[in-house]
View 1 (cartoon, rainbow, N blue to C red):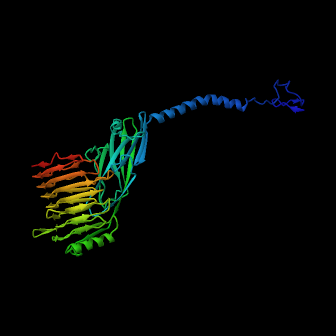
View 2 (cartoon, rainbow, N blue to C red):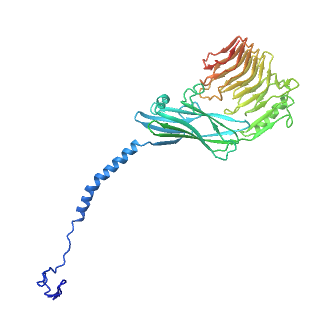
View 3 (cartoon, helix red, strand yellow):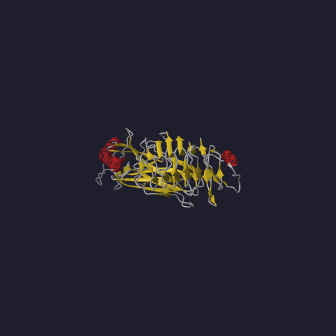
Length: 419
């Protein structure tokens, strides 16, 4: 027997219906659909929604502005093709420079150019003009430590075809030995389609040891003593160290040979006498990438010989060259600058004969010089780069030939004076 769960009446065990309250006394289990049926039903509902979401995400990824970043180089692709954007400080338009390690000696300020090149990826051809039509703006900034005692300075990017005809834009970066590094030179290009391209080049400046020699601490009484001093200094100094030699106002009557190191020679003047060399100076194998500066020195010849011959980088400033067969000769694989100097009564005043096609110009300025009474004032036999040499402010007077240029080197003489 069992009791009705509703009215409590006694019922047989097998009863399924209560005759007293007329209710069913069987327990019922709700029928449920199979699990695979529910999954298929949910999938039919969710799948179109998932596809719509994926399509929208892909479309957004394609249409929304993107940012491209790289150290020294970025490959940028759009509907017109792929482009290589790179920055460096050389005339090689295809090799990026992610980091520049340089030394800083005694110069008050150092400067180097940061070039922006743009090439077609497949051909390597110059794509600068074409690509810039897609660009809305270009800016440069230097990310550097805020505590730097001598912050790095830079110029606004602009085209400098006289400095580098292949670079689409150039910024000039200035630093000193007190500039705190590493610092990042950051080029930012905002594209008209909203994309952003960021190119960085890291600058690391290492202050070098500076050796100063003067008559107060070294024997410079004649050429032999000076030669011994330079040889000893070259043996002691490291490759990137700076050697400054402050010369007395005397005349050196024998040829001086500069050993394998860069030297800065500073002449002096007292009682009408300047530091003078009558047999010239010869530089055979100085360090390839370091510049020797000669300042305030007179080179006085006897109509023969060479006043200053160099196979290494030299920059003469406020010097005078008179009565030489050749006053200043740069030969081999070299770059030579001369500014604010006087060339008088020489066979050839300034002779450039350098053959290395991969050599990088130190600077394009040959300004403020005076060329008077020379058979040939400037002889550009061969020049290692095709940058335009700037002769602004130079005065050419009574020379047989002012500028002999068989190499057809680009020169800027628009502000030179010819008398």
